[in-house]
Length: 358
Image (tube, rainbow, N blue to C red):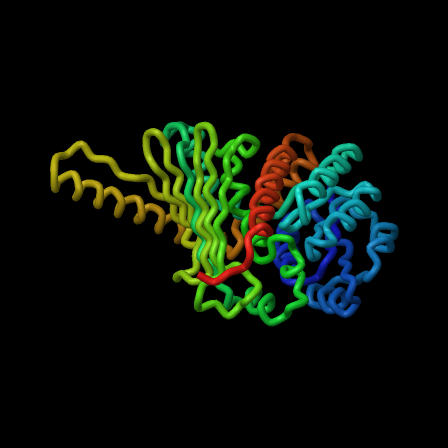
């Protein structure tokens, strides 16, 4: 079975999507669309496509895609997705899925009612390091999850960050939670697996640093989440170096540390040896774990499997498999709604907090 695939939105995210789509023998890219015709044309020329559109309705009518990838600004996601669902298409929607949980619920219900599969671009959730950690947790290696800590060191000087800061009309500024909403769902997608979103207590603290040059943006965020059996803490900072994204998953038996940037998973070392010998044994064990991780990463690098967004290819491939052969989607609808509900609660507290400098 060959899946006919279309991409709506021809910006940077679309570049990532097309590179992964073309690795799959089951996928045939049949068209791209952007509200700016020049963007669609240039994207098509770069990738050797024959057709491009500035009208989604025409693309759907003429190309009959099975799957539509939506890589437009999130303010347009719901409208674009509903139009594609009406044409019978399955949907891969970039994050944030929608502007709020109400829209997300409408989208999920509509997709279900029309028999269309839906997934969202939470690529970090499928990062190889997190998949490896999830496997260890399922095997009971660390016992019951007690606490999860997430740390994001964000680079406002990156190409995307610079574009947001220089253009006051950028779509990020029109999100209810602005920059933080655009980044936080990756983290919440992981935490929602372990913390009970419906019954948790959530506290948000956000501010603008004294040395910040961005008067209307929060660039520091702390979120504390307390559930019945599990707690979580999120630290987002635009002032720390090096740039990174990591998790610490604390269990009743042991603790895992997951570094997504460097693709490293280590487990806390325990030793029954007394005094200094125990400390040396733990250090040796940590060195051994890092050595094994380095070897695995070298093998992945040799196989050209060390990608900037390693979870994206896995997510797209898994999503296409569930369309072709049935079975569970890589992200369940219930999990999508849990994450969106958590995001709404964070954004609400952000909106109730004046942007101030501390």
